[in-house]
Image 1 (cartoon, rainbow, N blue to C red):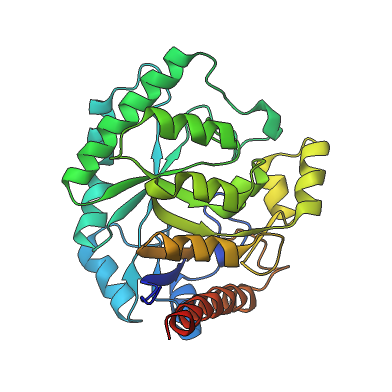
Image 2 (cartoon, rainbow, N blue to C red):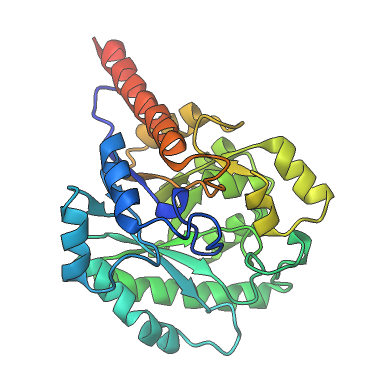
Length: 308
């Protein structure tokens, strides 16, 4: 297979500052993250709370460091039975416009209805759809909403997430089975593993729907303590459940090889929330970049040698 691995390596500012836990790097200026990320070699950033909310200002601040706007998290509420697609379309308007005008081609959809990832509740108390009718109603709304964002040039990419309705491998299977192809899957290696799945197996199963990739590693000893100790999601983060690629148990070579073989073209985003006082931002961001960049190069080189 003689072809280029057409991916870009980007990062989420959560390595420097955590929007959900301002105590983790909240004092760090945005431009520190941008300058350090660019120096390491990252090509773009996902958005966070400290980024400008107007496209001209956003492109200006990113342009100073020759960085691209990758995407941005959107907190959706479609899991609420009384939340209509029309209401969600109205709510997403400014964010969708910002992403489209800033060159992003995907939007991260995080379902926050009834979610407990920011609350002082153990992970087992997360919300769940109980009946097939509930799943189908939700899936229909997600497909319709994804169709709307796609009409504006931005593909909705669903982020399965700890503490939310879609957390486990079975949840992801169900959502993908019931939604239309308009809805992309944001494959998050860390959340998939913490949620009980094998990252490579699940990626292989849903590769045709993957529109965006978050690369985070997992420390299995910590996630085991989190489950057994009934920790909250934020406790799990503070205690080091996640790290950057190459610092945990996940087979990123297997993940990237699958993406390459199936022609994935898009972003590989390092998104590894940790306490920067324990895991220094620059050091870990550089570790994650070097691990992914080395794998991309190795996969391309291997393909070239095989074709020779």
